[in-house]
Length: 130
Image (tube, rainbow, N blue to C red; front, side, top):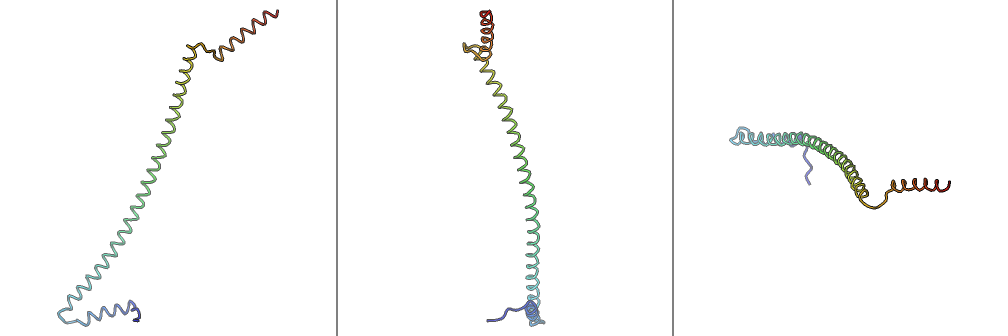
């Protein structure tokens, strides 16, 4: 099994390829191919770096949007709770008013009617006892 080559050995081998073809017709294409390969590596590195920066910026923007949405949802919930309380009060008032109207027109005695009757009865009993 062959031992792994170090970076220095690989660099020396790359130079040796260019050196081997120095002065030949293929020297220039090899140099261009080598530079194109290195430019591709540089481009890939730059693209990765740009992607990482953009990804982080998008993640921060996403957090802001999520927080704003949560705030909007909280505000909406508060408004709904207030509206429900107000509606409940209004419905209670209307229900009490309707019950009072029904009782006013019905022959059913209310608590206040019974209290009045009780006072009158007390007066009559007081007069009879004298």
